[in-house]
Length: 364
Image (tube, rainbow, N blue to C red):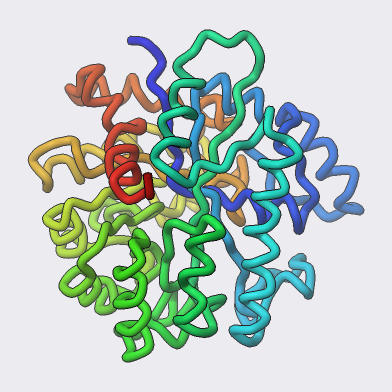
């Protein structure tokens, strides 16, 4: 089977590059060595990314996040000015990261491209379909993970004009809705936000939203909806939080024409993985089974893709045994073949479904 083009619906590129100083143009081994040298004896989660590895896997387009954690939930090694207490502080961080993506595209265009319109998407895909001998650049479509940085609804047109195309309301709970480990439905502020988002044309990302809020959004949001990185809760042994998707949310998202990015993250595949064999006991076959489960609910392959969240607070220690870097992501496809998926269906899963959705949401 020819190597399918892969769209990765979730990567925290700006955060990792600005906070940890990672240069993803480098081969992954160099990034890991640099991390080790910079850590001062404190081991950092092993990076999975690098431009040569993206190219080896045919991963050519990502939804690159704007991300910051509230200080109450930030990790001990976070830079103090990269977490927030107030919406104004979140807005500063998110604008800094969006500007950073523009800086990458302007100064390192051989490695990074912003893909903000249908024309830019068409041109970027044509580049990746070419037989260029040099490494091809990664396309980035900006996604805001947690809407705390939107202080006022009047700001939304400016965010759109600067290239933001996808907004997830929550990471942790906030004034818009409940989030991971912090339950809560969609608030009046949240309803106002999604109403304003729909008027402009933003894609809504349900990832991290508490289920009652997600279900309300599925009922009332008229625009495009995705879950950029979220697996089916029912398949995950020992799962007991509000982070993953119930069958009800999956079914309603499918009915709305949405797409789910299955994440090859061990805790999203088996909540007991650490005590039940560790990394070596978790296989990409479990990712294929997650994909198949969603396809069986849908009755087709049109509503599932990949959202790795690689380097998003985790590393090589936290992903299935077959993966050392993102170059290994295509090792998933033989497992899908074993489950009966043909090459056309695998291409839809690898990128086609998300490409169809995002193409229809981008401006001309």
